[in-house]
Image (tube, rainbow, N blue to C red; front, side, top):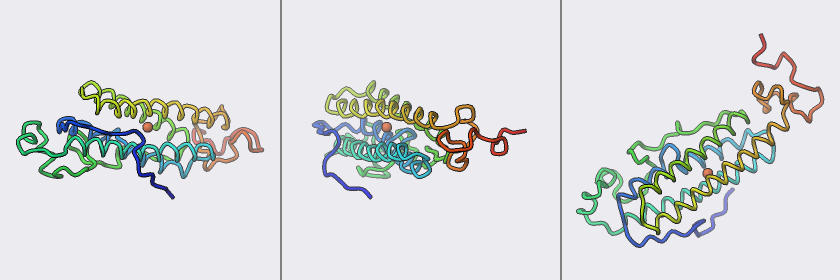
Length: 218
Ligand SMILES: [Fe+2]
């Protein structure tokens, strides 16, 4: 269950509309490394995480990513207010406009609509946390690219905030990965899934993973 707080995580107050910027920044709404994919990735992966701390971590970050999705929606909305048809054509916003007017739609800057193929939920703690670490770096690079293209400080400041949060998330997932590997049998942690192979956990009786459950066994 979620509780909605009626304010953005970081304020967005853009004075000058700029549809060209909107067309670039929409990628962090519905693009391959955007906030929608991030929130769905973490809020889906959390169910199969074997440790309470990791379920909490995925829930925390997944929920924050929904707040970031809201910020990106606000940025795009404010960048496309009160446009004239001439401005829409001049800035190349016409291809988005013809399909969505100035509504907020989950799409990449290239025009490709959002797809769940942007994310994975594999049900394996090591695999999922590595995906999450990579996802945070890809999001950080996308924000770096946006900052290379955008000059308006009203747009740059919230984008810089979002970029910093990706770095914090990367660090927290790194801590989560260390916590996971500390609790697994270190000789075998790439070879079993702790959601199923519970006898392989360090804190369970029975010692290290036996040969029968090792998928690499010959
Ligand atoms: Fe993130």
